[in-house]
Structure formats: C-alpha cells, structure tokens
Length: 176
Image (tube, rainbow, N blue to C red; front, side, top):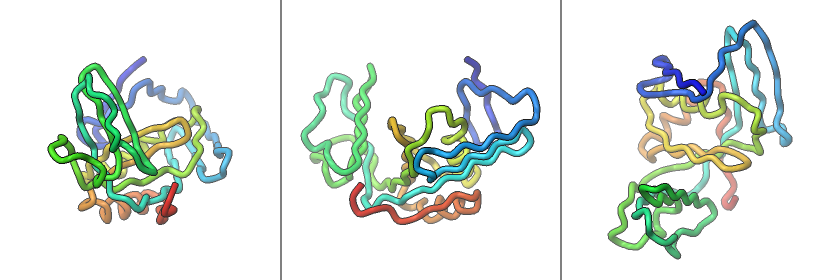
C-alpha cells in the first residue's frame, strides 16, 4: 500500500492506497439509492454527492483508553471509537457530564447513501474542497456512508465551498 501527499488538496492531506490510472478511462457508478453519481476520468476527476445538514450541534469527546462508554453517549447520531490511546465519542454536545474533555461546536454533513465500498475518492473529493478553503474537518465513516463535521463558525464557508465544487447540500431530516 502506498501513501502519497497531494499538496494541491491542502497541507498534510494524504491518500492511502491511491493508484493512478494507467490510461484514460471513464466510469460512472451509482449507489443503490441513486443519491450519488461518481464520474472519473484520469484527466479530470470529479465526484458529486448529495449532503444533508443534520440539525443538531455536536461535540467530540476524549476519554481515557480504559474508560467505559458513558451513559450520556446517546442520540440520533453517535460515533464511539476506541483505540489503545483513547475513547473518542461524537454525540450531541448537550449530552456530556461537566468536566469531560471535549471540543464543542461542530455541525455535521451526512453524505446521502448508502455508498458502495468500491467507490474511490469519496472523502478526498469532499475534504479537498474544504482544505482549499482552509476549513478543518473531522470525518466519521460508517458501513453505509460518511459524515463530515465542521466547526459551526465555518459552516457557511463549508457549504459555499462544497456547493462551488458541485456538491448539493440540503437540510437533513429532524431525525435520522
């Protein structure tokens, strides 16, 4: 597996396992739900998606590696990730107990899915537009789709950048 840095996509952006096409080609794929159309050519990669803005404001929490998953880690959208170094939780920001280390004020854009596992460049096409606008992003991936979290203060610029890159952004449902 190779790792290549792509300075044009922003500082520190990398792509793991990228394989450059060996000849000009074009392929079009649609997900099962027709919410995604990915068109790629070796000369001009382009991937467009429908994104839904979730109504809640989220926080990203950090607990110790040995911590139990807390009871407050609930909601319509919650992500829990354990590594040898930490337990990270993304959930509505009003859920946490006082004194918990966290980064509040994140808004979430859900990529309409489900997305096929064979799709290439989903995150790169979305985060590239955000990186070009100097917008930090926290990404969560699930079996069916991807979620992009941006700081609430950057939301307007993120929507403008993604829209300018050909993405469609709509208000998401009040519940997922």
